[in-house]
Length: 93
Image (cartoon, rainbow, N blue to C red; front, side):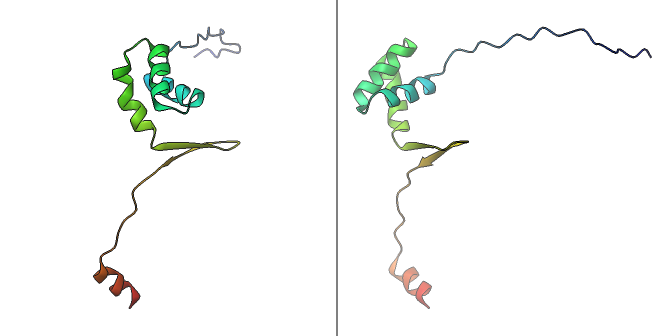
């Protein structure tokens, strides 16, 4: 088998992907604090109706993104759990 010392160069072409609706919601959250304005901004960015964006705005309102120098962390708020009196008493023992 012949060995190639210098293989031919490849032509690299970057992929062009359109932004998603979730990315538009994130951008709208950065631009405004009000959910109504966020829905309008995201709808204008993507060219869709406000009704299509409102469920995503509500869903994203429960998430908070914390940026650190090397990574981002998504914090999801969850309801607190309530313990029954029997369980609390059993845990004390």
